[in-house]
Image 1: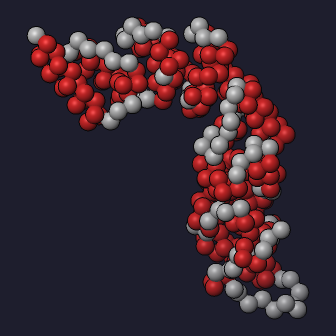
Image 2 (image 1 turned 180 degrees about the vertical axis):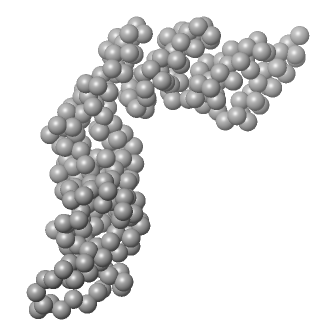
Image 3 (image 1 turned 30 degrees about the vertical axis):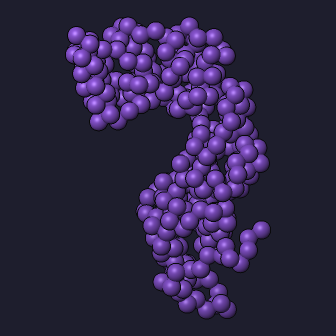
Length: 275
């Protein structure tokens, strides 16, 4: 239930005078429609985009839009965040956000103070079906050993059969057994957000062929997949090869460029001192 502190006040420009006793007319309808557009603009929502992507909005009363804002604000979302989310997904204007919100709070379960961050990171959660999308994804993710938080709830919008399972299968195809893959995913949930063909496979190929690496390193440092192949992995590997050095993946990749260069200089100096 919403308290009075959660009630949203109409901006002054929306307080258009319409006689309460007058019967509806075409003129009144136009006035009410303009009021609705002004309301969307007050949230920094592009009304033309919203109408194009959600034609049902034309017949949706302003009271329903206000109720949506009331509901979202009662769960801790700021007006700025609400506007940004709805502008990204105008279908929210004619949907009920309570089922997915209740799912996140009760079944995940996500602490209420963390809900705004979860929704801001992945607004699609608000449009996802609990029965056909969120609940099956939760069952699969928890079967891997993942405990979801506000940073990983975005995985709930991924299709289990077409998106999540192929990534698990790819990791197993490298020679890791199920418990090993599960541990890798728990340590680095971002693995499940990566494309197999565009991200994971090219990085494995480079690691095995160019770096002559050992797959056991993947188990120790699955975060390898989260680094850019062209901007970080290749340049740093080649810098090490140029000077005849080798580092574990974690020491090679986790540090900043400045720290990596300093480490490279340090190793070169140590080699000179040993001569």
